[in-house]
Amino acid sequence: MEIDVIDTFAELSALMRRPLSERPAALRDLLAPMYAHVPMQGDIVELHHFGGGCRVDRDDDRYLRALERLVAADVRGQIAHALDQAWQHLSASVPGITGPESLRVLFMLGDPGDPHLASTGGYYGMGGMPGWLYLIGWPSDEVIGKLAYCAVHEFHHQVRYHNVAWNPMTVTVGEHVVTEGLAEAFVEELYGAEARGPWGRSLSADAFAGALARITADLGVTGMQNTPAYVLGDDAAIRFGQQPKGLPPFAGYPVGLHLVEKHLRATGLTAAASTILPAAEILRSA
Image (cartoon, rainbow, N blue to C red; front, top):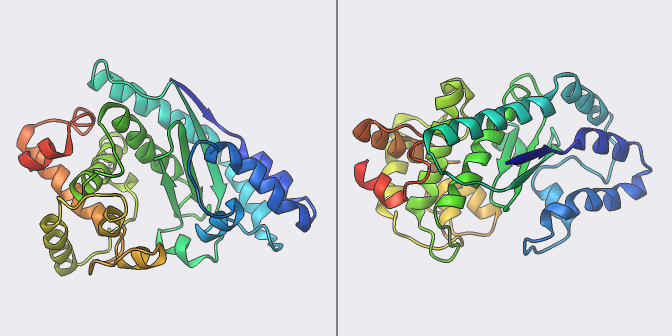
């Protein structure tokens, strides 16, 4: 597998030095290749801002300093090294496992004042676009060392869905929460529990019990128009125009991890070895 971590650090640095009027077009040019084969609604720049990306409609002197910090920490190299490790571990654990022939990784600087980015702990990723990983974050002390782990989480999704069918019309809540739990368990398998993302960690015992009951009651609900509300929780569901389900933020992550951990204990398998298993099999053993 050929993995290319695009040098968006340099491209964003150049973009931030352009006149303000030129920055939206430069950002569209940077992001357009990633969206080239993905149906999308709305303007790329508006979507970028909506997702917590750095603003290109105003100046912010923090942005260039943040990019310099990312370069000094060699976050690009950290991501490339972690993805290579992840692929080697998966290949050794599951002989014959397949993945994309090539993978491009695009890191985008976040906006430190954006409430959506703050709600995710200051960083997040998306791995659902074939051949692309998208990462976004603000390099705070708490975040800068975890961006590579986020890349591994999203990479796991890419590999899983080269081996397990994903149909957005028929995907179930069970599949969606299991894939998030598997990705978190895989990160922990490689780097320890501290490498896991912050999503859903703060749930109290009562909140988790309620979320577990609510989600497991609806594991068979189908369709990508429905499943994210169970994974991301009510705040995100409302933000993205979906029906809330009475769930706290990012409830599907700890619930998915809980179900995957039960599967791992019951079967003795590793997260890597479970990557290609259908969700129904994982849920049965859980």
